[in-house]
Length: 425
Ligand SMILES: [Zn+2]
Image (cartoon, rainbow, N blue to C red; front, top):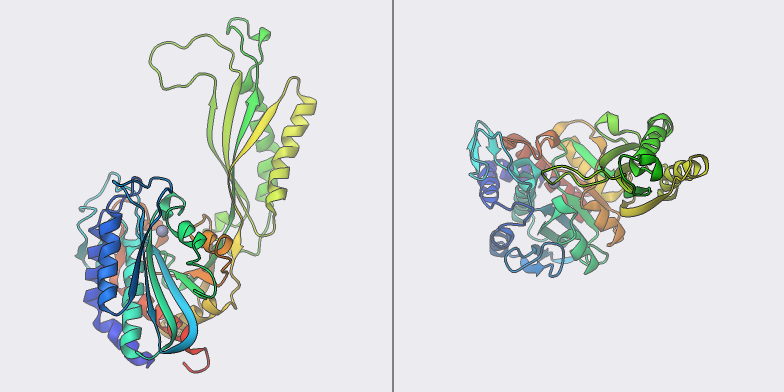
């Protein structure tokens, strides 16, 4: 049966490229969340014709949702002929803005030289199309399968997933017994399995001062200088400590295989969005936004405590130093184990299609898997799909048709293993 699935996918090569191009032609740019409904309806129409039950779910009241820009998600489900698990393929349909520097029209869906070009080609309409073709080939070869198969097209992944996977997860769409295994076809290369991601702590640190006339700064207290002391302590103490942390998480690229922290923004004193002359004030507030990415070996409590220890020490040692910390976002690190059913099934597909073991990777940044784990409490989830992550969000984004064909075969074999069990093939 596997040969017949693979043959069908080979025969669907042009259709797979055309489907990807069709999906790219919906300019589902987020923000603001354009063309979500027609794109979701396009997916729904295709799958309805193939026997799927369709649900269109608008995430009303989530960030950005409005009648002009409704957050419309599609969930398609097809039941097999008997009891068994449900395998779910989840793709986000939103893309980031095209930006400058394109040599092709970003929303034309151009097929050329074995590639499909356009915004979202690799991230991740190519993966969505590959999963649809994989499932369709599986259904044609094996109409009487046990369990159920779901395909979803969800919105807002690029802005945190709150109107998409998070919303659906809160409604039970990503929990047992409705769903057992989830594959997210993000562009992580056709022979790699992404097991999860690092954790995130975004926070705002404010140092406080006292306003005074700038010609007599000694009468006030400069919040920006206090922030300078924080930065100095980060440079000399925190960054070396982060660099020295080791992890068993196989994060790629290698530079992210440790703890990192980006200083996302610093604002002190008067805003810089005016024209004219500033008034001579000593700033009484300075705010820094930090974006700290952490590892399975660290707890969120450890991560915060490291920063707090520095701030508390400055409060002790430095005259008039005072601070406040405000949490902005917290995401725990995630890693599905390599022997989890969904990871094993896709690994078998990779072995069959490429004749080698998969590489296992962890994403440096988060994606929708976080909501499936935290809200849905479903942990048998990985990301696997065609395309090269480095091309995501860049000009002239493309996906290789060969890669889509091969990864569709891997997905179909993985699907077969999950539904029929690893021993029967
Ligand atoms: Zn993506």
